[in-house]
Length: 434
Image: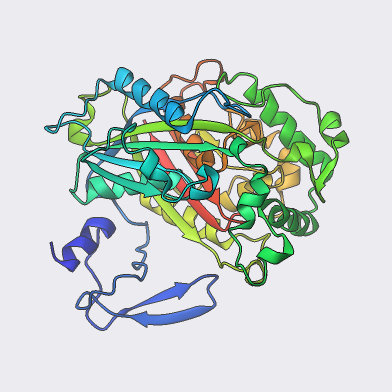
C-alpha cells in the first residue's frame, strides 16, 4: 500500500502535492511546512477539509462489558477483573478465538505504574486470549484504545478487535504519588506536582475566569451522585446534597474532598468490528461516526489551563468527521470530569453552554437538559486509565437501549469524552450513533 493510498484511507481526500502542506503546532503559535507524500516522514497532522474527515467504511461497537467499580477490589487480581469482562463479552456476543474469523487482535489498556510492573500488558496476554496473537497496548486513557481498534479495522489489518482495559488504583499507597511521575524529573517532579495539584491550579484559573462558585461545583457533585444512584456499576452511589459537598474539607484548594473522583478499581471490555462482521455478534451495533484526539504542551506554564486548546481542537475534528454542527445534536453526553470544576469547563469547550457560562448553565439545570452523565460519570468512580473508556462504554449501552434505570429514552446519538495527563493535557472526543 503506497503512502498516498494510506493517506486517502484515513483522511478521505487526496494527499497534498509534493512540496508540502501547512500545519499548526500546539496552541496555534507555530506554523511550519512539511513534506508531501514523496517522503516517508508522516509525523505531521493531515490538512483538515471543511466538514471533516470521512471514514471510508463503517465500524461498530458490538459488545460492551464492565465490572462493578469499587474503591478496593481486594478479592480480585487484575487478571481476575479482566477475565470477568472477557467472559461477559464472549457470552454476550458468541465471539470465539478461532483463528478463522475469531479474535486474533487484542488492544489492552493498562499502566506500568498503577500495575507496579514494567510492561504491564505482559501479565494480561494469556487472560485476554492474545497468546500467539496480536496484542497492542494503550498506556493512556482507554478511550484511545477505541481509536486504535478503529485504525486496525480501517487499515484492513483485521476486521475484529477486542479491547480490554483494567486499573487498580487501590494498589498504590497514593495515586498522587503515581501521577507525580508524569512530570519531568528535574523541575516539576521535585516540587511534588501531581494530577490533583495540577487540577487545583486549573480549577482556580477557571473559577476566576468564569465566575463559577463553590456552590455551583457542589451542585455538579450532587447531580453526579443522583445519577449514580441509578447505576448499579458505579462506585460512589450515595446521594449527596450541595450543602454536604460544601462542608467537605479542602483537598487541594479550591478542590474539596468530594469534588474529586473516588479511588476506584475496575475493568472494561469492548468488541469492535467492521460492518460486514457486525451481524455475527449483535443486532444492535453502535456505529463509530467520529473520533479525534489532541494533546497540549507538556509544561503547565506553557498552557492556558482554563482555555483547553486540546479539547477544543479534538471536538472540532470529531464533529467534522461525524458531520454534526455542535453539541446540541446529542441525545446524551458522557463527560470525563475527574474533578467537579471540569464538568462546566469541558461543557463550555464542547459547546453545551456559552464560554464563561458554565456556572449559569449548572444553575439553570443544563446538566439534566443535555443528559450529561446519566451514568453518574467519573465523579461517581472510574479509575484513571478507564475514565474515558467507561464514558464510551456507557454511551454505547445507552444507544443499545440496555441502560436500565438510567436509560435515556430514544437515545440515538451520543458523545463520549476522555482525558488524561495533568489538567486535561490530552483530550479525546468520540461520537457514537445507533
